[in-house]
Image 1 (tube, one colour):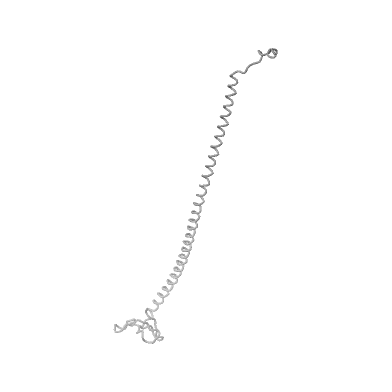
Image 2: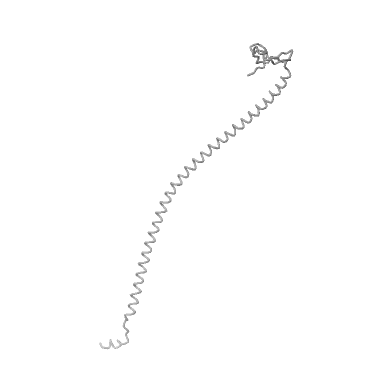
Length: 161
């Protein structure tokens, strides 16, 4: 049996240094796996936290969006009401302008008529009854000019309002 160990000198024994290197490599690999595992757990927790935050902020934003939509519809309704009021005011102003123009024409016509009436009075008229009675009506005499008379007489009159 001695022949078996004849080449024993040639067999190299494992040095403690190579086993230490292998053990160090194993520790490094284990630490790397553990670190990557922990990093994955923290990243997953961060993603879950972001998802929850996003869900909560979107829910709040939806409520805010509903409030903004309600305010917008209220403002739009108020704008429409103001527009209708403005249009009604414009129509009223235009009607008043037309009425004013018409009244101005009437006044101008009456002014011209009274200018002509002043020419048509009988001599000494109007005298308002010479103070005895109030004569507020102008009598249209078909044969002569205008004369002021009492308004209770049954004649053709131009009366003061």
